[in-house]
Length: 412
Image: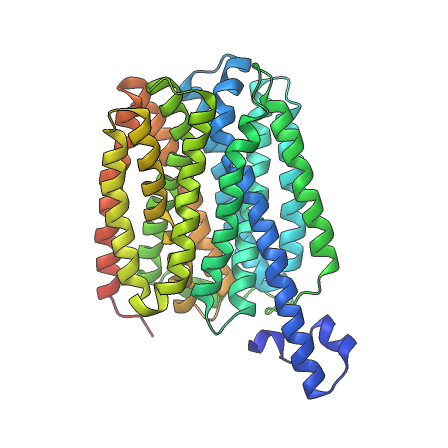
C-alpha cells in the first residue's frame, strides 16, 4: 500500500477497523479494491458519454441546421472545458483529495448531458458540451490520480485496466446512441438517458472511503512549478496533445465519414465507431499484460507509428467494409498511448502527481479542442478522407517527440 494510504492521517476505513496491524492491512486492501472498482465504473460511464457524440452529431446538426464546420464547435467547447478542469482539478486533487473532485465532476457531467438533451437552441447545446467537458475533466484526472496512488506497485498496469473499462463503455456507446437516433430529435433521448448514468456514480463516490488528501488542504506551488517546467514533462504534454486530439478526431468523425463519405447505414456507421473502441479495448488489455516486458517508451513508439500508418489506410479505404476493419486497427494502435503517457508523467513527478496528471490531461484536452475541429475544416474544404488523413503526419510528429523525450535526462 502507498505511503499516502498509511501516513500520519489514517484513512476512514482504517479508523473503523481499529489500530491492529493485521486489521489495518486488511482494511486498506479492501479500501483499495473498492476505490479501484468505483473508478472502473466511473470510467466505464465516461466511455459511453464520449462515444455517443459522433453518432449524434448528424441528427443534432440537422435539428439545428448546423454545418459540419459548425458541428465541430462542440469539440472546441467540450475540450476547452475539459482542458481547464483537468488542469485545475489536478492541483485540487493534490490539495483536497480525489473524492471532492470526482463528486463535483460527476454532478456537472450529468447537468451538461441534461442541458444538451433539453436544448432549444445551438447556444444551449454548446453550453451543455462545455459543462460536459468540465465534468469529464474532473473525472479523468480524479480517476487516473486515484488509481495510480492506491496501486503504486504497478501503476501502468492498473491504469491500463482503468482505460480498458473506459473502452468497454466506448464500445457500447455508439450502439446506445444509434438505437435512439430516430428522426432529427432522436439525439435528445440518448443524452437524457446518458445523464442518469453519472448519477449512479455519485452514490458510489459518496459511499466509498477515500484516502486522505496528500496535500492536507495546501497547494505546493514550488513542486507544481518543478513539474510544469521539466523539459521531459513538457514533451510528454506535446505527445498527449497529438495523441488525444487524433483519437478524439477518429471518435468524432468516423461515423460521419462512413455515413456521408461511403453512404453506410446507421447501424454500420455506428458499428465503425464501436469497432474503433473495441480495438482500443483489445489493445489496452494486451498492453497492460506486456507493457512491463517491452517498456513504456518502446511500446509507445510502436503504437504511435502504427497509428499513423493505420490512419492512412482508413482514409484511403476503397469501401465501407475495409473502412470498418481499419477502424478497429486504428483503435488498436491508439489503445495504450494515453495510459502510457500518464504513467510516464506520474513516474517523473512524484512530488505533485495530481498536478502532473492534470497538466497532461489539459494538453490532451487542448488537442481535443484543436484537432477534431481542424479536421472538420479540412473536410469541408476538401473531403472527409482528407480530414481524417490529415491526422497521419501529426501522429508521425509524436513519434519524433517521444524519441527526443527519451534522450533527455531528468533535471535534479
